[in-house]
Image 1 (cartoon, rainbow, N blue to C red):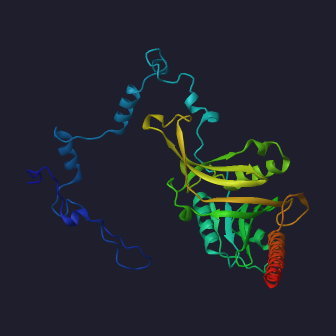
Image 2: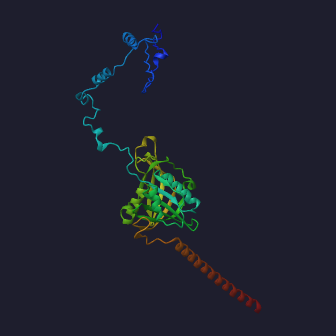
Image 3: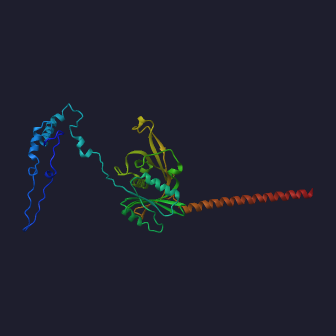
Length: 364
């Protein structure tokens, strides 16, 4: 009666419930005695234990026995590092701390990217392309033109950023400058942005995965001049995606290149693609396909502080856009003057010829 055919053991509900005992002081009723399975006509728990131990079909788990068996199966030290196991590292080099792969984000570089209010459509798209290239960036709404640039340092500190890329637009985006700075101690570099083409504008065939880390390549001349060495270090810290960044992918499939030509820095972005599937790990058999964006940066000057301080470098060949426009207007004016002079001289020659012809006709 107490051992069903299905192998399950049951107790009455009254026997399975826990007894409640009232506590209190004074002259109340004495606490009731907890009822047991015997009082309700049930089966004592000792009887269940006897049934389980006597039944050979019921399997029990002994923790101490399992631990003993695991210790017996564990090989000894001499067996593991014997000559029969050549794949095992006998010197425990895999556990050495100095050769372990680092999975933590240690180089915590963050770049703040934003622009002034009133920047044009092309430069807004350029800023979005730059954000896609740098997964370690932090966005910020537009900056007021009349505000002091020293407030940018406070904004960067509030965003926990130690690098800043700032696009300044003047004359309704006719003149656009790129400020690149290291927060909070500098230096700061100012570039005049020329020949800008966004990724959507040029429609090139290259492509790369969003968030992957870029290779940064530089001309050999960047290691010869002091101001170019400083710019190279700033480019590495601002554009280089830190290793193990949470938003980055742990591989390289595109290249960001900086070339120094005609006293300016030419920015290009390429995709890395192997010739065939077998050439995936061969660096000599890779194709470079341009992705975009592209632009030319004309360096103006370098300050030793963060938007302040002494000017440690000034480009002698740099001309302000206003001066360039004035020179172009003067050249156009000189061209117009020369054209007017040539036209006046031609009219004068034609008039002399006409008078001569009229005189000849009069005497005929």
